[in-house]
Amino acid sequence: MKWNQRLHKFNLRHYDFWIFLCVMMLLAIGLVMIFSSSAPSSVRGKDGDAYSVFRNQLRNTAIGFAGMLVLSFVPYRLWSRLSPLILLGALALLGLVVAPGFADESVDVHRWLYIGSFGFQPSELAKFAMVCFLSASLAKRRERLKYFFKGFLPYFLLIVANVGLLMIEPHLSGSLIIVGVSSLILFTAGAKIRHFFFAGAPLVAGAVVLISVVEKYRYILDRVLAFQNPGLDPLGDDWQIVNSLYAIGSGGLFGRGIGRSMQKFLYIPEPYNDFIFSVMAEELGFIGVASVLILFGVLIWRGFKVSIMAGDLFGSLFALGITSLIAIQALFNIAVVTRTVPVTGVSLPFFSYGGTSMIMFLGEIGILLNISKSAHVDTVLPVNELRAAEITHIGRLRKFVQNDD
Image: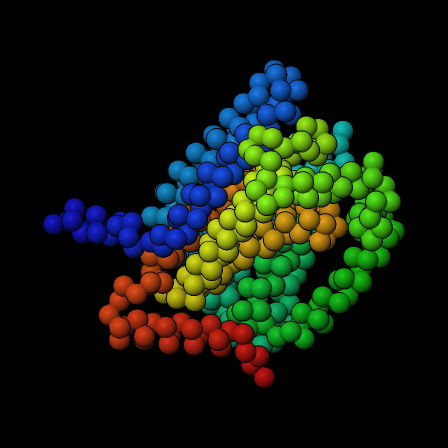
């Protein structure tokens, strides 16, 4: 009898099937595109192995998939208790990245920690840590948000601390993503718009001055100027984006075909990384790109539905944060490669090459699946119980976005 109860408890039908299906399809397409886009660069590597990048990504995906399965069975409320430790660990690792003795002084950008041949990017952990901590803290102290100094300001200063450490690296895209996701969680929990303005306006003004004066951050201004003047420096700052647009434009409706991209042959630097979307557009065309966007759309829709129907406030904010992190990063990457925003390095979830990013995103999907088990996102309850759940959670979420004036 006990074994039957355990099997019933871990029945996969209790999880959101659409989230799992979308992620599996995105991973499958992503692995195909990794192999196609990385082969020319891999052949030119030290060992001449065309499969080297693909093999590493396959290993990263396998580790992440195993982590996703494990975390889907771990009760998500455990993360509420662990959130302060995770945040402190993430801040400590961000500090180590730029600390003397750990940072590689031969390069200007410090984003990785290495243990032997294993590399880890702390910024990916910092994104998750902020989502986890804000969700746990606001679930307990949401009432304080109507006050600026004892409610909103401490959370704002925490965001500034994370952004400050990231900008020392420097890591502009990571900073913007953390600001975006954290602000969305705060706003949903009940923060007032005027508080964002009062705290954010001086920070933005200071950032503009810093970018204009400090040589280390002049590259940001250069990229903004390049964005405002397309084609001004096609062999310099515009090189990546010009070739990205060539790739996207030559894909047409059905694409050139898998493996037939021209721009991946050293025209786009590291085409298997931040600009993998461009290669995908060239090889799969509009139909392929639209299919991938639909998969991302369904994944994000189901994630937000889990957030609305979650069993408690922590689960609701946690699911919102995880889903928003995937959505914002995907939209940011696509906006960069299509020249909708100035160029900055940001990976495409489940596609771009990278162990830390892949493992973290799949782990977060595992947590989202665990939250979905208690969310009743589909009509699996009796009508009266389902209606009660909808009224409770949708009503609560509506209250989140109201100003408590």
